[in-house]
Image (cartoon, each protein chain N blue to C red):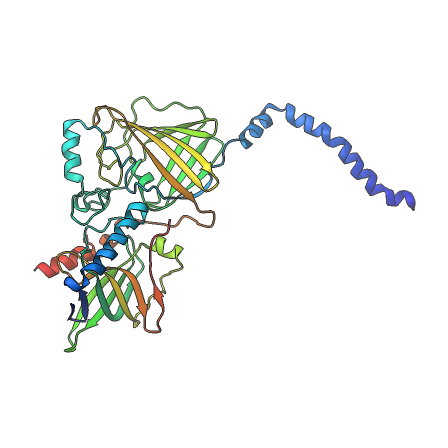
Length: 261
Length: 143
């Protein structure tokens, strides 16, 4: 009777005795070692919302040093409407996403109001954007950027961890998009290097360097800040649904047109 | 001076200047220090120099992108009905503030405060809605 009562205790003791052996075996496995080191990778996962006090741009103090063609484009895009804050969105009637319904694209999505979610996978970091329901794949599996990529709205991105910072390289972007909400233009030679760091539990800071030999005369730098929203989920935002529903024009455009007739 | 025209109230004139300036400076400060609060296309389409109030009856609530839209009938003192459209935040932003497709219903008597579109069409971007039962909602992006 007494022995039977003791059986579970012996079983537990036996399991505990084996545990260090199991642990030792686990530690010796190189694959598991790799996953253990992954545990120490900084955690950027979650929903983040832009709180950059510079609003729609990466750098409110200094515009990029543009090549002449890009300078002319910037002057056209810039919103000088009286009554606007000095640092504001570019001209609505020239905005590729608002006036023409093009995808927002990178890196402008990182200056948008709507939040994004970061998901960290074994081989890549995903950024799920609420705006356009777009996804950025940042490959962290050691692959190189393609030599001469076909341009896309989201581009090609690779990343590597430098201590607590994820360093991302992005190339292969279409020149149809604006670089930011402010209306700064760029070419398809744009190369963005962005350094993402969670400066504390609630803040994600990204330091940017943009090199664009076709559009800029020298690299342009900036910084954006995001607030952590653990209770938020990513919703859906599609730019031009109203126009599709109302025969190619928004109801705002129709109202103005009807009034002027 | 407060003008009433076709059920629409515009606050204009020198008496309102100080208040408007305060509102404007407050709004400018908000925009400056919380840039992302700006709606996706900013305010440049709207006459931010004067606040417009529109009272009417909802005929349709469109839960669409890039802005949720309220269609409403606005009746002036002579009984003439004008069709108005009022836009606010996008559905994704509104749902985060507790709104859904049923928050505004056909037949609701509402009062909206916002800015009228430049060019003078019957279209406003509103930031405050008051229902007949006194409920007040102030949609705003809260990053």
